[in-house]
Length: 70
Length: 268
Ligand SMILES: [Zn+2]
Image 1 (spheres, chains in turn blue, brown):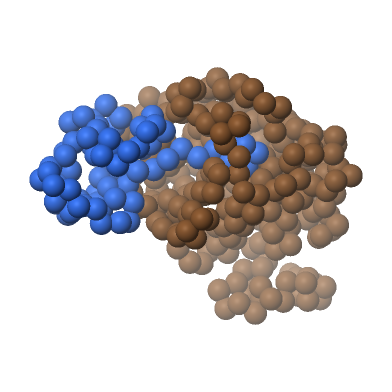
Image 2 (image 1 turned 90 degrees about the vertical axis):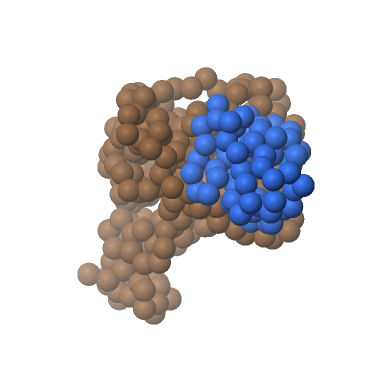
């Protein structure tokens, strides 16, 4: 399947993947620092394991960023 | 009405069809609160002062440290050791004596924030920690105050604008502060100074767009950029019906002072 992750099209052999598996596949090493949205909807953190992405989906990984004085 | 000196000072704004004399008058009448006179607040304060924002509130409890000067461009070397709000007020008034600067040498907390933000039209979040970011979001949502979120880390920056009750808030996207052990420690963090300028001026631009009323605000989307690739993009999202503060069944009904991770290195 092809899905768009953070604006880039990525190809996977699998036809579907859970968001948890996708985080592993994308080598996101600190999933606690990421908020995930699929097709514009922000996921509950406890739904990463049950939410499945498929061909054509748009996925965004949004990271916590502090700033200013950090 | 703008006087002759103001017409000259703000002529490059007035020439813009989207601003004009009427838009500049709105800027002159506006009251904007900047929370944090640091990396983001410093450039934002300078540009908003230059733009002629009538009242600029600045809240920060810190004193200027030598390590701040790499990015906090409103503070100069002789200011080291002085309260940031004092240093900021001085520069703002040298740049534009017409700006009424209101200073609060303090930090925002659940007990004072609603009382401080109530006097302002727009709030700019220039803070560096997640407890403050969630507090500002929740307070602005509860008080119906539009605000600009900004975050920077290393070579990345992000910003979104929140119009409470209408557009997604910070908590719609990030449900609660990250676990303390996951937040990068001071030594891992770091930031390229110029990125603070890039993001702070994006936030200042959002303030002016909101006040004058032109363009499309950074609502229901996060502007994200990486300075290494100089790639800018928008992550779009919807309001989250399950949001703890602006959703259908809010669980955050009073303000929370989250515990802040303690930094091992010298603070700021
Ligand atoms: Zn929300």
